[in-house]
Amino acid sequence: MAKLRDQVSQYIGIKPSEICFPITEEGRQMFCEIIADQEKMTDIVMDQLS
Image (tube, rainbow, N blue to C red; front, side, top):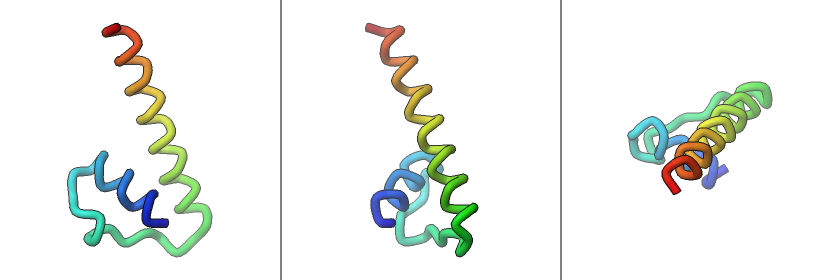
């Protein structure tokens, strides 16, 4: 959970300690999907710059 909190804070620009996750598993899954999509986009951009 701490790793997910750190990743989310990186993308939204607030401290990890200020992030409160939703209680539901569905909400956690949604955050994981958003982060995965963001990382894919970063990889695409970095590949294009190389």
